Length: 124
Image (tube, rainbow, N blue to C red; front, side):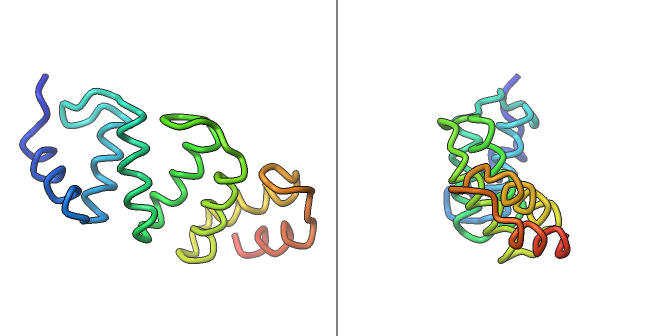
């Protein structure tokens, strides 16, 4: 199946820097929507573009991609950093919870930080 007209239109916008369209392209490449084959490397590319531009949902998703190594080598420090950015900048409750979990266990950090974990649990 060929990519849909909707996807092609959104892809053109994504390439011009539209964050919402970048998020759409990420979703299509992640889940095989709109006639697009699943391709985690392309999903990562569009997710990172949107995340760097402040797209909170993509910031959280980028943390997940780094955590699981989908489309990119796993990197727990980068995963933790993206979750924290979404928690701080976007106030995303999921990102706040993921940040709390990572501070509690030390995953992506040098060591567990209970006070930081508590702060983010309360925020979530």
